[in-house]
Length: 174
Image (cartoon, rainbow, N blue to C red):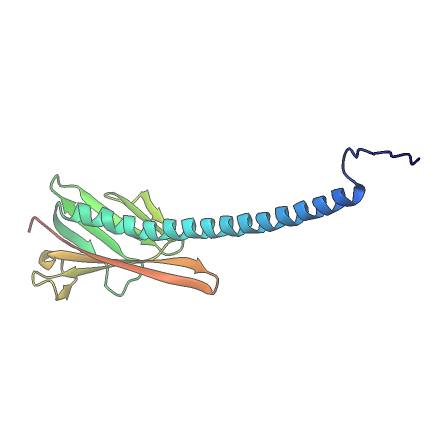
């Protein structure tokens, strides 16, 4: 007669545990690579968006305000990449915008530009236009619209790329 013993295995062998651990480690490593790549792409996208938005916010602020002023009292030359603009509002206040090329900041204020409006703006130019909307002028008495251009740099894997935004604001009170 044969003695039949049935053995019941409980648990895993050492080989099974090593293989499972190796597979889990490979899966975790590949997931972390995907997460890290996605996080880097997300941060780059947010940086690009904030830089672009800084340039657009400056233009929006100038356009909204310019539509409500009496006149332009001073404007920098169109060739000046770090421009300044001064306008007289309906209450008699002088509103000033000034770009600092060293710090790449745009400042705004009443009488003097002391409040930070945006940072990271590479260039800010202003062009005064006559009533025909085409002819450029620096004579404050002839300016009926102001064309503003902002430039910001966004970082790409191949290097910096310059984003240019332009808008024009017509003065409502001539």
